[in-house]
Amino acid sequence: MKTAEIVERGRRVMRLERQALEESERRLDESFARAVEILAKSTGRAIVSGVGKSGLIGRKIAATLTSTGTPATFLHPSESLHGDLGIVGASDVAILISKSGESNELLGLLEHLKRLGVGTISITGDRQSTLARHTDVSLDAWVSEEACVHDLAPTTSTTVALAIGDALAVALLEEKGFEAGDFARLHPGGALGRKLLTQVRDVMVTGSLVPVLPPTATMRQAVVQLAERRGIAVISDDDGRVAGVVTSGDLTRLMEHEDNVMPILVTRVMTRNPRIANDEELGSAVVYRMEQHGIISMPVVDANGRLVGVIHLHDLMRAGVV
Image (cartoon, rainbow, N blue to C red; front, side):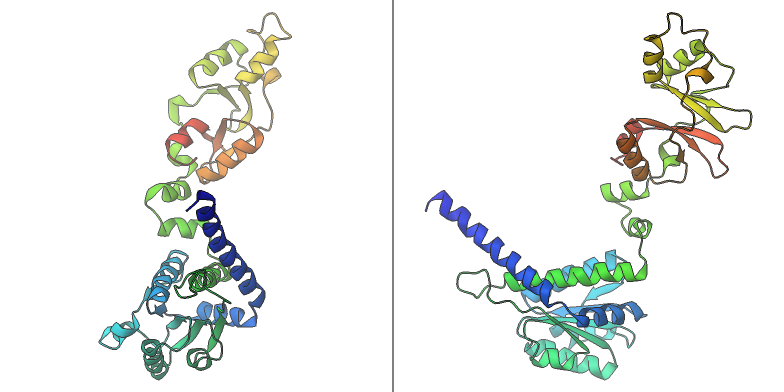
């Protein structure tokens, strides 16, 4: 078999799945909005269920819902009939996934869910199926064919079901006003948690290490700070507020026009109204501003606007924020 033929087979699968997603997007209708409303109003959990490959997709959807602020759990339909149904409460909402909509195990679970008064949403490839007709809301996951050359192995259909589940989770988090800080609290570990949880106060230079000078200082004093404090000197007034900053770039430009820069007052050279970070800001937000304005350090102020530190891009990088 030629390499080009193998590559084309892979491209065919991706092409078919992309086309199926585009078609599914066009068919998305008001049923989707009703499903989001039901989930948003629920005071219980989302109970996700499916058999076989649909069950694997269901596990991922449950995990995505949980990580985006909607408590969810996966319930295997067979196990539910042997005791696991006890985890389901009347305030829960069930999401049932089946390509055919005729899975005996899932229909058996649906019957018990109805008796418990649980809200039900189906994701199925046949909106005329038993499952679709007997759930409160049915979401259309129909596909014209599987990417499998024999049109048998669940491929395209599971991709569409997964996309609908992701769409539910994202639309739901927006409906609930779920913010980045909420996401961070649910993901405290790993690089993602560090990026979302790290505040400027956790990383900034403080105390005697802050390169601060009074407005009466000269460039001789500023040069010392620039050399020892990684290229920035902060000019602070008597109230502890930032009056301006002097950077290595400012010194270089000054030297191009002045023979003797040492006696010059810093107030003549400093940048007034510089970019400033707040100590409670997320480090990732400060990194964005640094990149946007081409700077590598900022003075940091507290809620009262007083200088409390300096934040450097290198420190943010070491903290794993970048």
